[in-house]
Amino acid sequence: MVIKNKKILSVVLVIIVLILITFILKATKKEYGNDEESILKVIRSIDGYNSRSIQILEIKDIKKERVVPFLLNNNPGYIQFTKNNRGNYEWNHIEKRENQSFSSFLVHLQGEELPNLKFLFVTNEHNEIAKVELDVNGQVFKQEFKVHESSAAWIDLPKHKSAEYKYKYYDENGNLIDE
Image 1 (cartoon, rainbow, N blue to C red):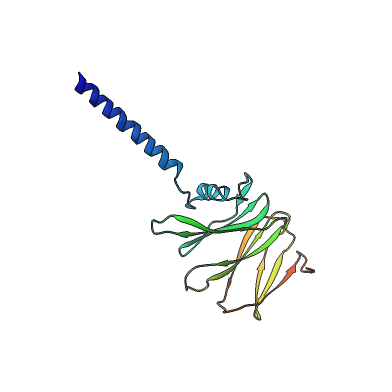
Image 2 (cartoon, rainbow, N blue to C red):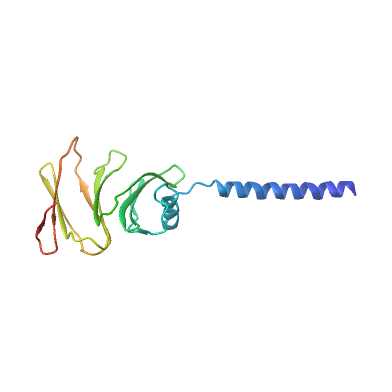
């Protein structure tokens, strides 16, 4: 009878320990940017970004990096992840702009592959810029946008040791917008 009770007690203790280990592992599990749902969880876990109103505009994978433009309370931003050795995307950079309908971000990609710099443009539905001309050391890049729509657009930049960036913005009628 004593041996039977010890076996039952041992089995119960093992089950309790397994339940506790499972609970602790789930509670301390690191969130990764492997899909849209987990990307939202990562963004909300960061101080200053824990809003319920987050709209992911795109998930762009570039080599071992993932860049995700989003709107946080209608403010443009992006989060950048790097794929680890286990194949999970760990976030390494996040940025946002307050009270803007059109924002640009210089995205630095790791590695020596070209291009390793990209300009990311993020707009919300209040955007009135239809076209931007970006002058990088005399080389002009053009990007068009749909006005009054949330969007993300990219320009691949040539590799430079140093660069000067100049912008020209145009409305939907082709008129230059004063900055």
